[in-house]
Image (cartoon, rainbow, N blue to C red; front, top):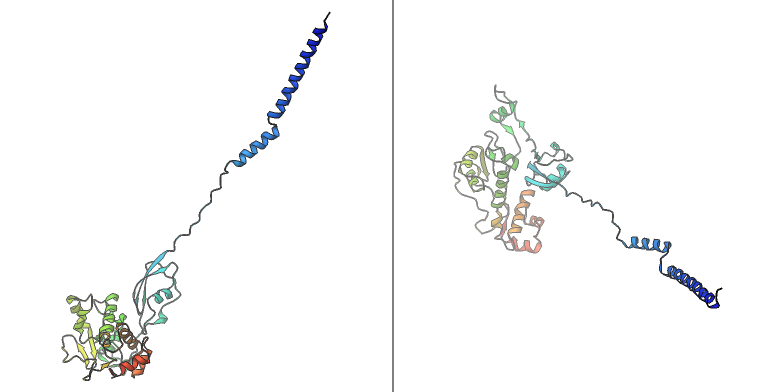
Length: 315
């Protein structure tokens, strides 16, 4: 028979086992994470990780293309110009300073598109030929040559060509007319005009030697085709003029219709810039008819004109 002590011992062992089991369950519930807690932990970890950003495609616009175009003929500044892609002819003419008064503006389509590396030539107006008698036809010679060689024709007074000999007047010829002379291209033609504007009319054809790009051999090629019209008449190559007319008279006054830019600089209040404007204004508008016409030149006001009046003369 079991004693009372054995019964107490068995009850104590059984109660201790139950207590240990309960204690282990409590520990498990407190310290082991639940599935929901694990899921939240995984989501939190995934959120904290840096997410790869989608690659953005950078769109860069290509720089605009540059076109080079060459313009010759009846424009103020023939040469090569840089223009933007898809430019038109009118933009090239604007870049070259516009048409000259002698340009045939109807012969060119201003709206025509350009292309890289093109050349545009602006032609001159056709001279007006008015024969004073019926043209005589010589076999083997074109009709126009017959008219200029054997028939005296009527032409405008300010023409650069001589009727019978077809010599080109280097003092009045346009850039386009000068390019018709053997050995003269657009660049040298423009230099001749610039030299003429800065230094006054050529006294004789041999003075072309002073133009940059014209040497002795080229001058010899040019001389048979040119003349230099001055107030005393035509000066042909090889003829030495007796005297060179000066723009200053015996009283020291300057003739503003003949003075070069350098001579105009001797006037009170006139520097190189205003002297050049006077020459440019005279070339564009014709001779001055009275001193007050100088007021049309940019930079000359009434006070400056009053300073100049005693020094100038108009012929």
